[in-house]
Image (cartoon, rainbow, N blue to C red):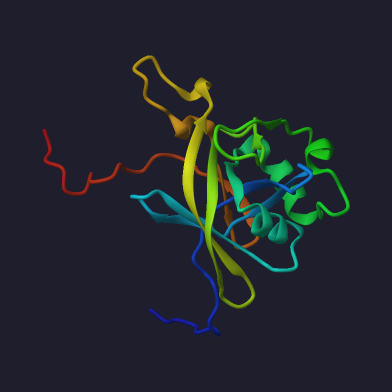
Length: 188
């Protein structure tokens, strides 16, 4: 197999596409769309998002010390794209997209009601890394849309049709190809 070598770069795709909501000290809400978000730790539950310093939400999150990660579905992808290309300094993204700000349990930053999962976060540390700074945060509450709960009380997130980002393009997740541990599970 012949390979072509490129200069170093980020090619770890696909990534979750998320809308991060926040609010300034006057409670003016904003939404920033990010693909550089991920799980950092299970106990305590921690996540990270990476944001460029020049982005409007950077200082809002830095100063407020909190934000909400809102998962994006295929139905929300146009709103997510809009929130990623427009600046909250110039537009009201909740108004322009028709998204509904909701009240969280712990943080004052708004949830996006249309999202199937809202992850409330308290900022722990900002790590300067270069083009982006990593915001390391503890998860302090999680809200889930009850319409994805089944009769047994199981949350069926995959029914939400989550969207992902891959090298400048958005995709739906597609079909199930296996479950964790299936490669070593004994056959019945």
